[in-house]
Length: 268
Image 1 (cartoon, rainbow, N blue to C red):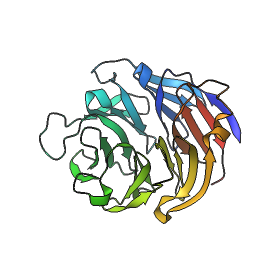
Image 2: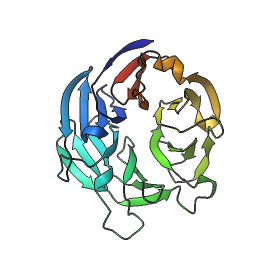
Image 3: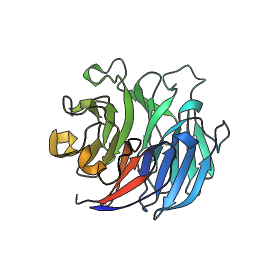
Image 4: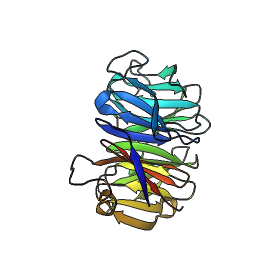
C-alpha cells in the first residue's frame, strides 16, 4: 500500500535505513549525503571536493548499527565513516597502496552489524572485505573466482550478516562470508539489477523491469511485480523518475527514484 513520499533530489542513487528508522540518501547530483527522520531532513553534507565533509561523485551508503554511517566516495577512491550527526570519524583508502587490499572507484559498500566492511572495487570488478580495524581480509569475485567471477558489480548487500549478495549485471551472485561462491540468482530473469534490500527471510530486488521478492539461497521467487504496477504511483508522465535503489525498515519498503523517496507498506 502506498504511504507517501519525501525528498527533493537532483540525482539520488542510493538509500539506506538504519535500525532506528532514519533514512540516508546519496544525491550524486549534489555530491551530498542527506539524513531524514520521519521524512524530514535533519542533517546533510554537501559539496564537491576532497575534505572530510565533501565528496567526489558518491555512490552508496550503509548504516548497519544506527551509530555509524559509511559512504562510498567514488571519485576520491575512499570509504568515509561518520557518526549519526554526520561528524567525520575515519577514512579507508588504499588507492596509493600496491597490495591485494588496493581498491579504486568504490561503487558500493555494505557493513555487517559487527563492523566488517565490504567494498565493491570498481576498478578491478571485485569485492574486498575489511575487518573492523580496517585491515584487509579477502577478495570475493576476483579473476580466480570461477563461476563467481564478477564482471560488472554495482551493489553489495548482506542478508542476516551471513550471505553476501552482489548484483552483477543481469544476476545476483551469492557468496558466504569466507568468500566462497554459493551460486547466482535471477540469471535469465533479471535485466540490469539496480538495487537490493534484504530482510532476514526474503530479499527484494529491483531491476529494469520488475521488483522481485524471493529467497536467493533457495533459488525461490515468490513474486515479481512489473515496474509499471509500482511506477503508476509516482511517474505521472515524468520519465526522469527512474527507480535507482530500494531499502527496507520493518514493514516499510522505500523506493528511491532520481528525485524522491516513495514509501510502501508491505507484509514480510
